[in-house]
Length: 64
Image (tube, rainbow, N blue to C red):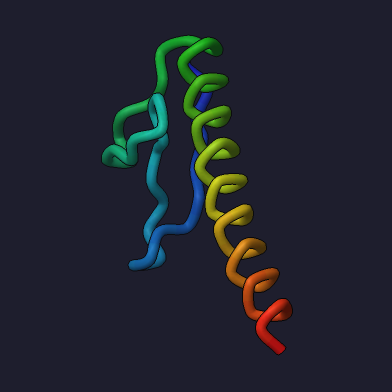
């Protein structure tokens, strides 16, 4: 039995993340390594998004 990573999707249904890609909830990552890489990719995307938002806020505060 593989490790399952779930999160609430926009529709409220659970999704499984495998290597950073959302898949149908019936498919699970087969190894802990796949689960780790999927989670690592989510963190990478999340931090990239956070950095973009912080850059926007910083540029707005400089203009004032």
